[in-house]
Image (tube, rainbow, N blue to C red; front, side):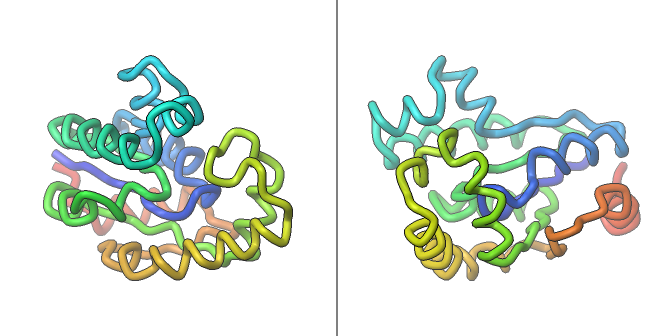
Length: 172
C-alpha cells in the first residue's frame, strides 16, 4: 500500500507528471485542487475570492486528511499545501513525498501562460510575478526540502521518475 505526494511550486508539473506516474505505477491519481473544487462545489478562484486564503487552507487540510485514507495513489498537491496545518509532516508520516524542484525563472515562464487560472497571481505583471515567485519560493523552500525525495522539474522525464519511484518506494 503506497501513497506518493507530489509537492512543489505552482506550475512545476505536479498534475501532469502525477497523471503519468499514477498510470505507470497502476495507481489512482488525485489532483488535490480538483478534488477540493468537487467537494466544495466551487472553483479555487471562487473559494479564494469568497472565503479567502485562510478558509481555503482549512478546506485543503480537511481534504488531504480524507485522501490519506486511500491506498495506492499519487496525489498532486497544491503549491501551498505542504506549508499549512502541519500538512508536510502529515504527508511524510503517511506516504512518500517528492518535491519537484524548479528555478523561479523557469516557473515564471510557465506561469505567465496560465496565470488567469491561478488566483494568487492572476493580476500580476511579469516583474511583479518574478518578485512574487522569488518571495514565495524563499518562504516555502525549507518546507519543500522536508520531502523525502527531491527531483529537478525542468526537463523532467516522467518515465524516469516512475522508474525511480518504483525502485525507492516500497510498493506493496
